Amino acid sequence: MTVKIVTDTLSDITGDLTKDLDVVVVPLYVRFGEEIFRDRVEITTEEFYRRLVYESTLPSTTQPTPHDFSEVYNKLAKETDEILVITISSKLSGTYQSAMQAKKMFQGKAQINVVDSLSVAMGQGLIVISTVNAVRKGAGLEEATNFAQKAVSRSHLIAYFDTLKYLAKGGRIGKAQGLLGSMLSVKPILMVKDGEMSPLTRVRSLNGGFDYLFSVVANAGKLESLAVEHATTPGDADKLVERFSTIFPKENIIRSIISPVVGTHAGPNALAVSYLEAE
Image (cartoon, rainbow, N blue to C red; front, side, top):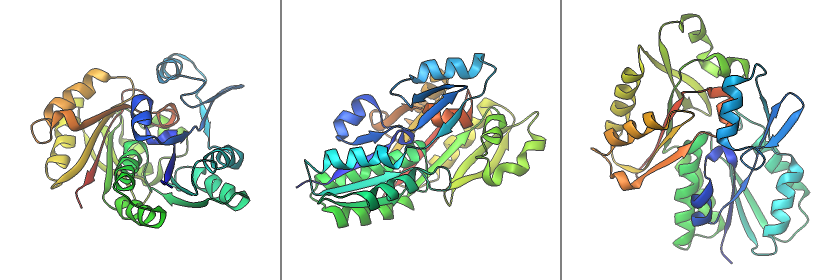
């Protein structure tokens, strides 16, 4: 039987891409006050960002429960005996732990492996996409698991933030904590390093951010895949895609919107670029 791949909504694999890849996406939760929504199931990205910008109550987020994963495992076990789960970094969310707990609780016959992507957004998504392609070429569960684990070190995410306010309030600021006091007139660019957010540089403007993001990718060597994401500024993402089209086929650049859960911490106007180094 073919390996079935499971991920979570923080991979930013949505819509047609989800169908094309035939992956199962487990939602995290977003909470505004007493209202709780399943990420991208019960609240759209557009509605989420509208509320984030205009409402005084900042949202909070919660990982999927072990029960959420158990339901997926039980359903997939009727179709296959090999399940591979690729989650957001365990240093940014308890999603990996929930997936592992559900694995221990699972009573079916399928074998389940869980891989910590040590990333988020399309940094995680590109690992999923590459692993799906390996499975389509015939990789079994163990081979696909090893492939995904090796892809972790090839995946990179860098993000431009208009502000660190949301990241700080959400408790996900990691090693970028030291930047908070100097963020009045400059824009931070962070990267995911060793599974958590780390400071990379600071720029004076959005255009400076464009230049820096382009420079990092242009000097990254041969790439397998490239993705550009936005929170509330699709026009800015379009401009980035145009610039990257000079060094990478435009039709192969993946476009996505930063998920509500990530957006809770990234805030509006954030941009993210993820790339997967070629093997």
